[in-house]
Image (cartoon, rainbow, N blue to C red; front, side):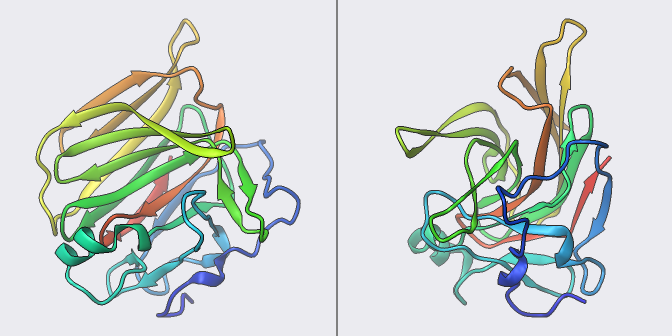
Length: 227
């Protein structure tokens, strides 16, 4: 059972490098309803940008990132650096699989799906993101951000984007698929709300951790699938 409190004790992981085997591709069909999922399947991950590591809060129909008890507008305007929550499945997905999650936001942004080839360790031992890709839903469309480390500091750039309106308090399913073209070129295709964007990036890994991040506002997640 998932406790109806902050799930910050999720990061009880493999001690050496947080590595998982790359054998068979994982499959998942997870509902985030109370009692329908297990924290044992997930790893809480720290952002290299922030000192804290948050979990998720269980609600009646899903989970949300840890946020102060304020309006969505006030969180977005004054507390965006304090509401980052991230977790990935322990088992990695593989190139050719489709990863999806149904999500929503209560002001402007920014629930997302995250892909990461490896996880590092923070100075205190927590799992931390190094290079990773964020596929972000927000009120102005979809963004794909490529994050890495340069000279020991976080660096990121917008790799792809689509400008379309998405409404707050509305459920959307974001789908992400990394694949290879017949010529061996790697590409990512993102679908949501009847829209589709794609881009080529040969830095994309063949196997990767997949999960969710809630940030910049109050975000809700209702399911997570790997097919």
